[in-house]
Length: 108
Image 1: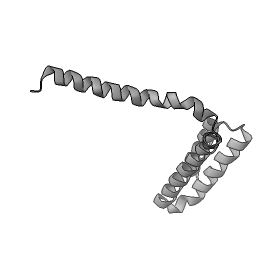
Image 2: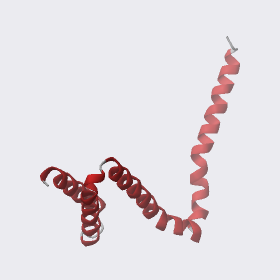
Image 3: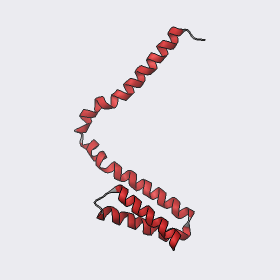
């Protein structure tokens, strides 16, 4: 078994590294807020992530149920319409799109 001093030193070093890694983003955050690149990332990254997520989910759903591709397309259109007409409320548009997809699959 290692010496108690060695164990205490290892825990202190690991704790110090963890603390430094947690503090570092906050330390460099202030200068980055003024960066035009970071502002552009903040504006476009959420849209890009949502687009990638939507493409992957829609592709997988169509691949699993090719005979229900029309329901996927209709639900996607409902989601976009509700999002644009509903003052860009994400939860409302996601709920409307999900509900329309479930209804289309079960009722038609």
